[in-house]
Image (cartoon, rainbow, N blue to C red; front, side, top):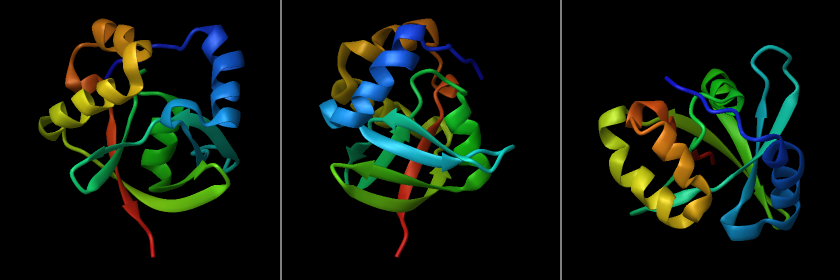
Length: 132
């Protein structure tokens, strides 16, 4: 799997701002670090396909992907509401429709990620399974 490191502008300014403002459907994903056990926060854009919700990694095999895969659970926060969930990896052959929907919702900002990493296997997708 590939990985694109987000530009410094994105990491240092745009991401923190997006998490504070919850702009364009952005939620804050909190997931426990696989090595440190410390909580890590990153902005994500959950997408709905049918009755299901998903997280897509436009940058590929990022730290939040590895952490979520290891932890199996995470929390999504948006506008004062927090939801704890289980994450189930989506097989590559089921990602096409989800990624297409993600690209519609996320807009042109993620387009270059999918141009540089065009293979579906390079974009991990997780099904958000709500915990009771």
